Amino acid sequence: MNQIEQTLDSREVAEMVGKQHKNLLADVRGYVEELNELKIQPVDFFREATYKDAKGQERPCYDITKKGCEFIAHKLTGIKGTEFTARYINRFHDMEDIIREEIPKKQDKPKKEKLPSVNMMVKNIKEALHDAGVDSKYIAAEVVRIYSDSGYPVNAPVISDTPKLWDCTTIAKEIGIYSESGRPHDKAVSAIIQKLDIFTDEVVRTAYSRNGHDGVTVQYKDSVFQKVVEWLQENGYPTVIELELANGNVNKCRVVYGEVA
Image 1 (cartoon, rainbow, N blue to C red):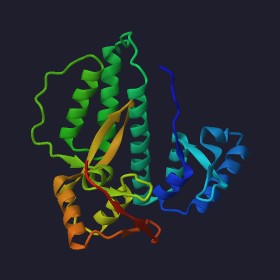
Image 2: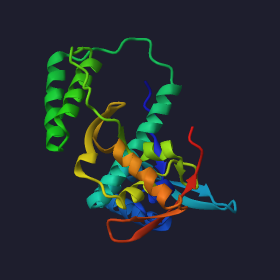
Image 3: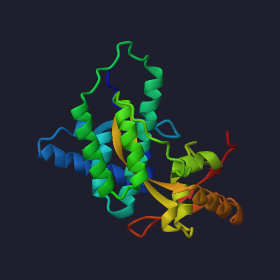
């Protein structure tokens, strides 16, 4: 299948990291200069582009590849870097899902991976997930998935006590919290969660695997979803919600409430 590389508009990335677009552009231009000095192709990370503003005038921006997002994430520290990493991974996965739906499936059956290779992959992933603090039952579920997807079904009981989990994007979609551009406002949900009393056992680190990408993501139990709903009700569904950034600055998230599908 042809590989179609997706990119994110630097305006969206600026919103994700809580910066003004002009400041992110300055950062990216600095990164491009450094990459050029190191004789590394910057187009693998950042690609110059333009967009038209509300007055129809062309303005500079960048198309940022997944490598570019990883580059920016490494420049961030603490929870801000973790938040941006989770958000850009989700965005690229969403785009890849759309592409997979639009491109016809190949008729020829994919080649089955050899069992020793699958065993080694499972071993490495188990160790990585364990080191990342993922709960053992989620590690077990991921192992079952890997063997099954590789053509070696595992007869294992379904984990019955796994709770329904939410990330900030799914919470935003479920409640109907959107940005002014019409996207589910996961940053606003993050801002609300900052203001809540959340217990340690309400936050779950789980494994994900979509479209060949594996990693660890932070999700929340249903009790956190209910707390977000209660906070909105108690605060009269505000149209501006303040998000405290890792550097101590505050980003004002402008919210539009829509109907839930």
